[in-house]
Length: 120
Image (cartoon, rainbow, N blue to C red; front, side, top):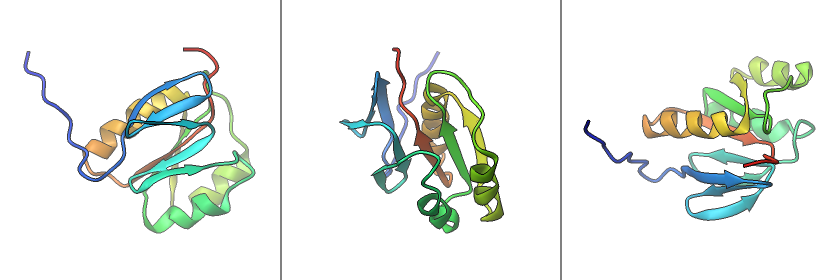
C-alpha cells in the first residue's frame, strides 16, 4: 500500500476534536464553530443563518455537524441555505470533519458548521 500526504494549500484542515473543541490548523477552538477554506469563525448555532447565507458565493456545500449523533436540523435553517444556492449535508460532527477535509484536499468549495462533541 502506498500512502500519500494530503496537501491543503492555504486552506485550513481540521486536525482533531474532543469534548467541546475542534483543532483546526494546529489550534484548538471552542465549539460551536464554522470552518471555511479561509479560516475559523465563531458560530452561534441554528439561530445564526445570515453569516452562512453570505457564504453562498464562496461555497457549494455546507456540512452541518450535529454533535455526537446525527440529528434533525430546523427546516427553516436548511431552506434558507438551499434558497441561497448552498447544498446542505447533515451528519455527526466527526463525520463532517472527515468529509470536509477530504473535499477540501480536492480544492472543493466547502465549509463546515460544527456543534460540539461530548464524547471522544
